[in-house]
Image 1 (cartoon, rainbow, N blue to C red):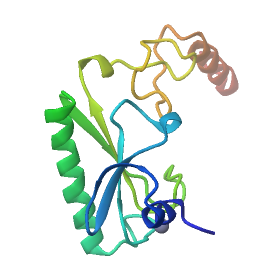
Image 2: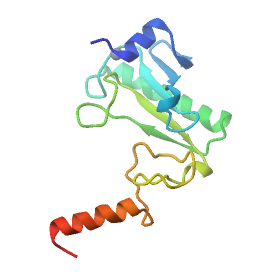
Image 3: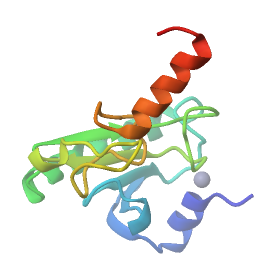
Image 4: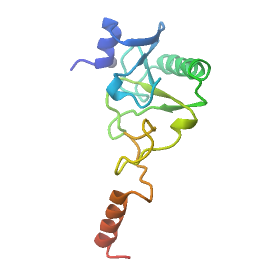
Length: 154
Ligand SMILES: [Zn+2]
């Protein structure tokens, strides 16, 4: 099966942030963005994740993650960044090519949207991968009560 990120590196078709000799950075598809400015950093050479990557590629990716993070602070006005990697089965990895998500954060993005019912500020991060259910969420209460009933405890 073809690797989507190898294909992207090969064809050059992406919303590029930067392309360097050993690693590249690009914006994910709009539907996959965690927040405006979300950037993916990947090595040019294929590896599934951190566990099988050549150490030179890990170093190249880490260095580029750092540069992208700094640019988010200076160019986007972010106050911080979230750096995410999932490697291997059961990690939540969705593309089997080493990649690191770099997501800019600022004051307005620190509030979270409820994972249960979707309430919360528009555009809040994270919502797609969060398990944050505030006490006000009706679905959380129902789930909690269901769990309590299954365990037979109050
Ligand atoms: Zn690949």
